[in-house]
Length: 103
Image (cartoon, rainbow, N blue to C red; front, side):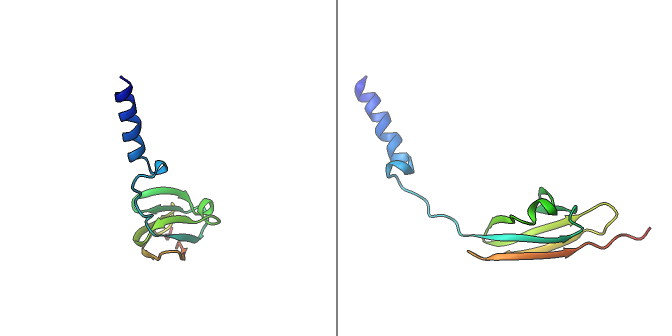
């Protein structure tokens, strides 16, 4: 029984990075900041709704390096669709000013 318990512990340590097991290298990331008017516009990145631009304006968003699809919407305004390239260890600022729809 003790041998089985020891085998489980050794196997667990081999699989856990904290115990010295193999670690995957960290994926490169970059930051995307938003400068959006009106600030209550809703931001969506890669089909995930994130919330109002005002909530993301200060902190930005950490993303994998590469191209990301950004949609900015607000009632009574034309939506904006953008493809944004995020570079490793860099901050990219997306500036969007929504246009109101005619009444």
